Image (cartoon, rainbow, N blue to C red; front, side):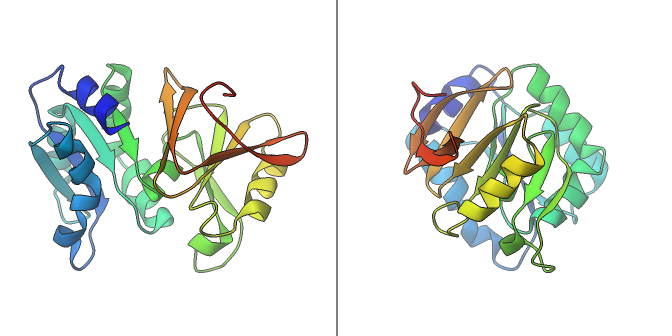
Length: 206
């Protein structure tokens, strides 16, 4: 998936922007996002910490990006600082022009139309959902699926959104969507509910 991202981004000679909610030691965390891309030849990255970066600068940098990565952390904070601000419109504009966008953890959760948050991912320890970016319409996801043992959460997602596609995504795994539709998986494991059973997917079963 890193190779595919770099191939799509390389069509434009501009940096890959990494948008993330700022926290102590963030500089040391960035290789988790960049290392696989660097191995495929990407070497121009622009870091956009939120909320310390001025809004005008964030929007400008997004518009000048060849690719966009949305990082991980507290999902509600990502929704507050990205989905509920003008940043969301800039990201969606880039998405519509074919710019590749990758979300890690919280970044993945805010990408669909519905952002669904596990009880393990919020201080209230409750099932939550709020509007997402809307890059994909009819799909909801759970992240850290096996690591958090979050089968119950995925089933709650399916109950709350019965007419959507539902996926549980493990760490070191990826679900690739093209034109808003899931088309391929890669990595450790991506799961869905089929006939009430948790089933591991592959590119032929999407």
